[in-house]
Image (cartoon, rainbow, N blue to C red; front, side, top):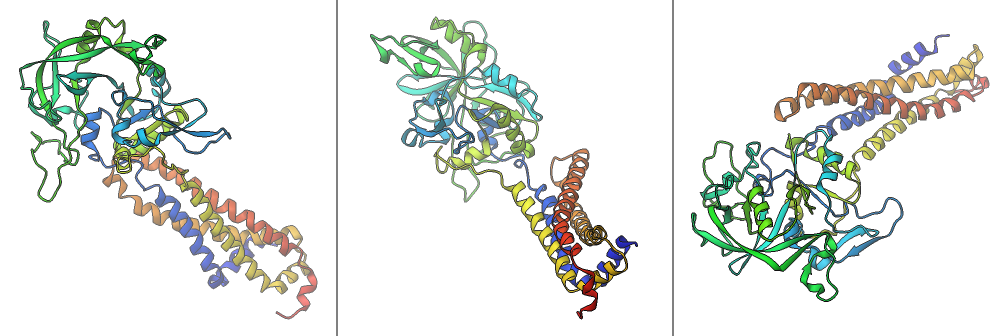
Length: 483
């Protein structure tokens, strides 16, 4: 007795009953495939001004990445004890000082060894460069500023190049003779320093892992965080102004732009970066540390922030997730475009919900499976006499289950195929509209195929088995009843 063929014929004769189930399965498959078309990153030019100034596409901060505990540990709100010069955290989370931040256990804001973190994330696909944020507070006359070590590397190409925002002069090059060059802000009281002039700058002595003196505990600032500042034994250095910069954070530049417009386009309100960082090369920064008699190797200096460049911004979210998985809960990996959004609230006490995409996809297929199995159940209830007839001519309970699963399986597979093919045709535009390659599209197509048919058939057949077991208990006496 060919019950599989009988099941196929039953589907053909009852399209009105199976059409809804077919549509539901096709819709679930279509939603799964289309969900992968949602960008896993950002357009190429998003946040390019901030990315250029920061020097990376992603930022790693020693803050908790979640607001809920996975292992049952207590989460606490800790007061902010960091310093503005340590990282860009206060620039984006400007309410940290008032609200604090969430932490698990004793792990809080701290300095960390960038080499250890680099070893953890060096194999993450898409990461092209990792640089620690190296800085010191300084006094330019009476103006407070931040002295930052950053080389103008040949690899530092648009849109991460600071050259686009230099309004006068040039970025400091390698140290020549006894002169130390620096790129100064063209704002914040520092715009009066002319290019080519010499500017006295006061810097503190940097102390690594200090133990504050009990006689004068206020002498060292930030001692609990791995880096201390000794202003009493600091030094005054003279920096030559090689250039001045001004960063317009809502100005979108093109690769062939030759200069930064002084004003935004008509109708736009200019928004300029107001963090006064004085840029020097790493060589110059090391020389400044030596003048303060700080026995510190710049390559071994603890840091509070890592700056990561990626090969494609269209994959920035996926790359950030891969880095976050490597680093664990003690760090927060933030794409710079997301930091721009968070700057509106300025709060680190924000909710980071779980990624519900996968859960919604499973729920979609569960719903379609219920509809498929439910349609089959309704059809069988209306045809109990036919099942009784099958039992009369020798069909066993196992045969009846096979008959039901054939109906369920064919409907689920047909619906999955329709939804999968329709979504894949639609997704072909991604080859032209994004940075995805043909090989990656083929790989994603294979993954989608396995996911769609695996979930569609798996869930539908599991629920269909329950319907089949019910049908297997229908007695042969049903053939004597009228439908």
